[in-house]
Image 1 (cartoon, rainbow, N blue to C red):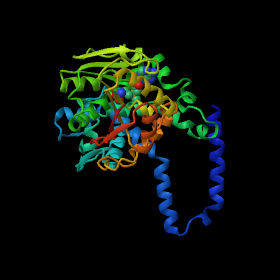
Image 2: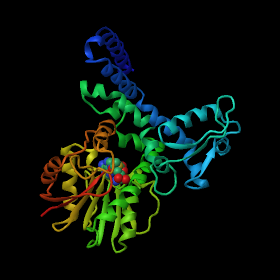
Image 3: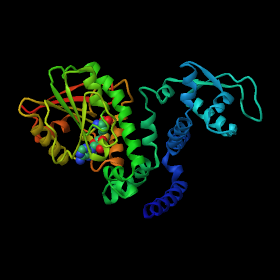
Image 4: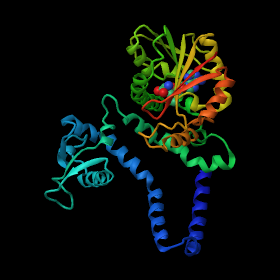
Length: 379
Ligand SMILES: C[S@@+](CC[C@H](N)C(=O)[O-])C[C@H]1O[C@@H](n2cnc3c(N)ncnc32)[C@H](O)[C@@H]1O
């Protein structure tokens, strides 16, 4: 409550200040107007995420995809599949109109209107909404987790983190994320599903580019969530004995996966022995000193000739043009929101933690994903 009161207090001051100074801030009327347009865009940037969230919760991408990937459906055809006897068509129309303007859906020309609603307008999927169909490889679970109230609440505490320090997730939710997830099964499921959905996407990229699993007899996925990544590795390399290692409350909900043994434990205390350690989206959750502790546990687990295969963002990696080049620094802010001191790292920063953790030699391998592979050796 204190944080909110502080925000409101500052808002009033800022508004008053701009009103009296605006004439002097801009170099031209054109700059003033284009600046205002941009400021409106920042003001309502959340509308994109939350309008898409409502469409995903309503299952609209699924409803369209169930007909055919290129199908178009009218408002009433979409409405007929919603879990309601009498959905509010006006509200649905307005959400869809916005999402068509944003190119999340496409629309075929309207033919007639009824009470201001284009009843004959037909809606179809675009490349973006195809990724939000909840079937197979999908980003739907990630979108729902990132836009869940628990995940969004820490973002409201960034200013407080700057002024007083501390962990945004704890300020918002009363506990660090892993403690919170262990006490809230719904959030645990939401988080683990989001991770599994990303693991599905990224493992396709990892397995298409990386040959370093070939010589292995065993591999442990450290912080492997519910085991999606290691399951994909053993599917591609059936000779590998796969272990999925995560906190007990996470592996307790993991499904049976052929070729994978789930083990509950704490990465700061020990890591099960294997030829190699795989770690996807683990190191970015922790500050350097914790990464060094984790790497030391990994080094003990793999012996002298083993390796760690890290899948994480390398901030200055030059080969990420296929995705938004700012996505790495977006995730760096996600680390302020959700982790306890974690961050995304440049190659130089990776070198430092790897060396201190006992891995003096490493390669960065680009893959067609947000993350890169960092293959590190203790010799
Ligand atoms: C960002 S998620 C990544 C999950 C998975 N590697 C993936 O990319 O899909 C981080 C994982 O680390 C696990 N984790 C956090 N602290 C841990 C600890 N002390 N010991 C073991 N696992 C831990 C979490 O439960 C979570 O599954």
